[in-house]
Length: 394
Ligand code: LMR
Image (cartoon, rainbow, N blue to C red; front, side, top):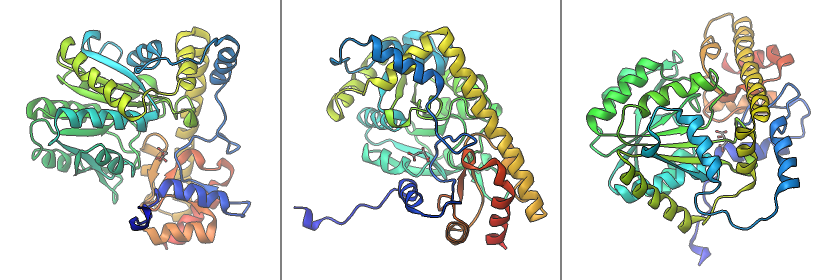
């Protein structure tokens, strides 16, 4: 049977991660996959996670099944963390999911059941795994203009113009904060305009929320999402804890569905759980249990927030310092946009050939679209990295 198959295309981000691991150069720099790194270049286990895991190890008495929804208290806490009081509690339901990707998948499959002919609109560019993941769920996709590489700013008018072709029941994928791969986010007026557009055209917003706490902090990062959630009748949100709790491999996430009323929320949620049962049955428990412990223990929660804020501030400082280094190396303001963008990623605006040269000649790994992971920048070698970038551009 398999002789008729051709090998599947490799995921570019994961392929680059493997290539980096095999590179013997000791001065190589990894700006590829989106994982947070500290000053030493390590992706450490967060203090609160380590403490919660120890407690779990000592206190957990059984490994029996939890259930389709996963850890109910984790779900309540995630709903609160993301939505606050933006939506009345009877209108939304939360289900634990295996990471942000798991949440995106089960929500997309549930939406496909609700409206098999819906088109899902996503930003150009978007996270490279969005299209494979959403089309596997059965949804058709189309893109809307989002980012102008020449100026490093949003193409908001073009976005709104393009979305005027969306039909009732179409789905609009938005990045909650820290847009991946560009780092360019909408401001609150733009979120408001998108909320109006969704209400007017009966479009369902689908927010991918993978970087909460990495942009402007926990409160600022939820502002756009809460604004839209408070205005539209229906919406779904895929939440990831991979980055902000640094539990990448544990696969911790949540899928949130907001409906017009409690009865419709229950019906949509029953489909979400039935999708879950038919795909992987139940979500993994360990990481979500640790996150639940942190969110319900005031001391652990305070420590988590403190460490998360340190991570965010480190990235913010790196952005400013790196933009300065690029200004010195290029003698221009061409890369100034990096200082203003948010979160882990920015795009340098290099061609794929220039990105190849950066890797081959300088040992600096960026994604092919020239996306870099800001947290991967070594603070003491910013001028070297800036000079290498300018050398491949000139
Ligand atoms: C990224 O964009 O690098 C991360 O979200 C990791 C991944 O799974 O692609």
